[in-house]
Image (cartoon, rainbow, N blue to C red):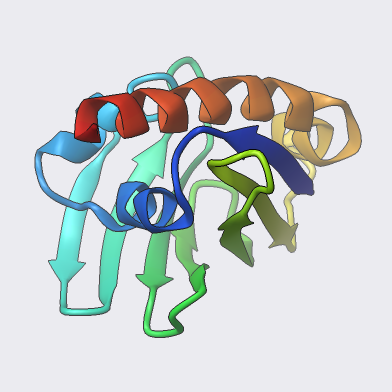
Length: 146
């Protein structure tokens, strides 16, 4: 799956939004993160591991995030509700009109048959729904930082 969007947030703010694992994370990502599923499991200077899922979804993942590369935040699924794996990344670049262009890609592997929801996510226009959630989230983050 891939996501492309524009936001008023600068690349630095986009990176900060994706790597903020303080209590603010649930407020920032309130459109996509389920507080009942979220659990921070580890945190270092350029990495974090967290259990995350969306509201009303049976799918959750434990992601090992890494932001040691200056332009990319990447993740690997270390545990999943669907028994498979996956990985992904997000990158923000300056937009000519201000703000950023954000691109994200991720895959899920070894999806068991009983998780048709996850298969549907990767084979339908769900990426548009995610774009419509991430863009205002990042715009709000930028406005709060201004």
